Image 1 (cartoon, rainbow, N blue to C red):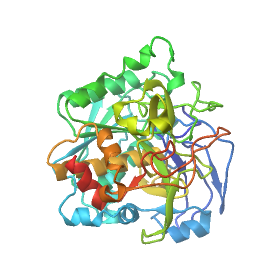
Image 2: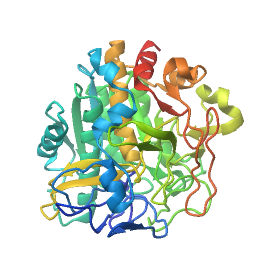
Image 3: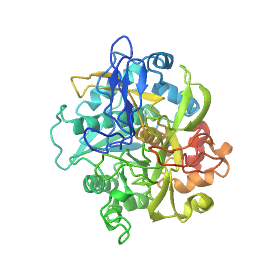
Length: 456
């Protein structure tokens, strides 16, 4: 997610912008979890600010460049979807004919992007991916796109990231993009529209997995810790319907580590908090890791918790939800409450993903984005692959994840034991052997994970 400019919490994304056709030069991102500015060759790290939407860089490059060039020019790593495929060992899955074919990923974003089909086609051509037609549906009255509107621009960037990376991981899956007309910020704003859109999709059998790259700090709901946080509880009906119909629902854990944005979107809480829908027991919370890859996608160091100064993977203890039964085995970590995340995927800005966008005529081209709103659509693709392998929807996968973590090697779960999610002056949680509140059960080796999840 990001922040600043418009307060849409569209995305748990942190972004870093790029410009120039020949080199990575000064850029600035309106961005997700940190509002960073990258100038010249060195990134400048301002004080953390709350996240709101995530973005997608304002300026573009003519084409992606290798990781080694990003390192030499702006001192961060940049990755293509092909590098992620290598890092997560997806080749054996694709070689077995598992591409997500016959399954559908539903992506929900405020406003959407008017150029998503064109942008996905350019992205696919660059990386040799098969084309697909995005099924775009509007829920309610969605205003005409205005590229000068920072809020709409941020959500268009989020939409681009969500669609391109869900497709990159599950290239055979159908993608439905649902655009809503009210920007989700903090508290309940935007959620009634999003939840009614999701519930409609669930009731009409529109998809198998729902990817949510947005969230609001639990504490920003108007009746937090009063009457069971009634305003939040009233929004859970879509997730209840999803559970009954076997639809998997994912939620980004956030980009501000153990803290998150305040109601006005101008700061973060000075103590640990958690966010919804990530913290909902009926949602799989997707946290963030930092990958260290070479130009081919091979690891040169173990994955660690994302915490690179630009943002950090969200995680912690819910102040609303009691510990669900599937976390009883990790009660020594979570206590009596729901803990997040459940699992983690790539999210670091220092390890950002290439995206292509053309919705803003002043910044057409390639840019770099990071955040847990990158991790979430990537994991939606993994779930779609497992759905195809199983031959049916997998529904709420959290019980399976915690059961699989009891025998991680056999089930393709890779423990993350390095790093923490302390951020913005708030002490967070350390990665430890086994489950922790910085990385969940860990990350994945897809060749084993997809098959193991499909068996559950």
